[in-house]
Amino acid sequence: MAIDINKLRTATPSPVNTSRDAKGSSAAATSSTTNTTAKSDSVSITSQAQELQSAQAKIANLPEVNQQKVDEIKQAIAEGRYKVDPEKLAANIASFEAELGELKLQDE
Image (cartoon, rainbow, N blue to C red; front, side):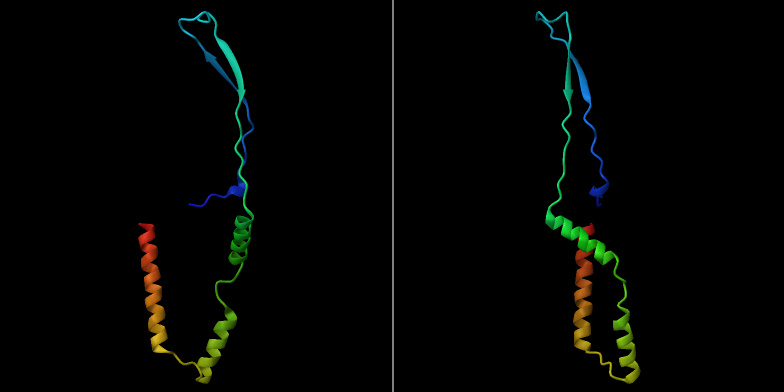
């Protein structure tokens, strides 16, 4: 699960009141109140992470289909120039199935 760290808000430190009773000592009759402030955490993003985030944004804006490539293949088929290499096709199918198998193992 991804966490969008760009929209995180840091909490403003607020004083915390605590009351402590010391039993068996001279301070047993009194309780002291201590004011402390909570420290806030900070996150810094490395330049490499920023570059990765930028690359992801660019990829998200790309079309899913390379229309120019589709048009070239259609024209090659229409002209009878498109040849299928069965060995290359088989190797690509096997590679694709292997990648799918690895993904399924990671999900489990």
